[in-house]
Length: 131
Image 1: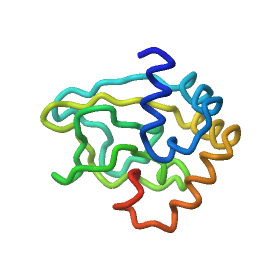
Image 2: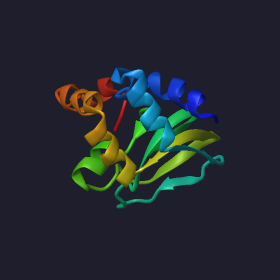
Image 3: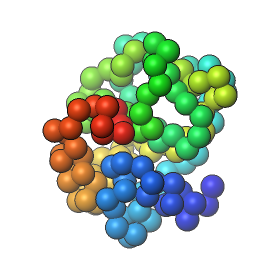
Image 4: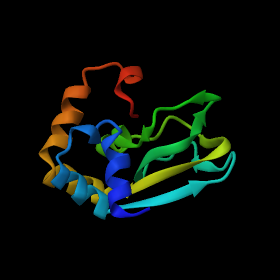
């Protein structure tokens, strides 16, 4: 994906939907694309996330339940383990990846991202669009 395509993909996902074009450009510069094949292990049980995952297409599942489009925010911020074993769905999943270090740099350089995370913390998980 080109940086412009990544910017548009990020713009459509909470909490990145609140970023300015300049902030999206910063985020796109540190974002890569990854594919997980059908039923591939995305995160093992008891593991904390080491990167942020933003779903483009396909699904990921934990205990046969579909998960939000953005995974890893809560784990990266708090250091707690993920919600158990996460696997790609039957058709696999294509996603964008932001490393832990880049995620913290983005929070520092993009105040709108931090503000979005803080304001969404009061919402139930099911309404946030991320985990």
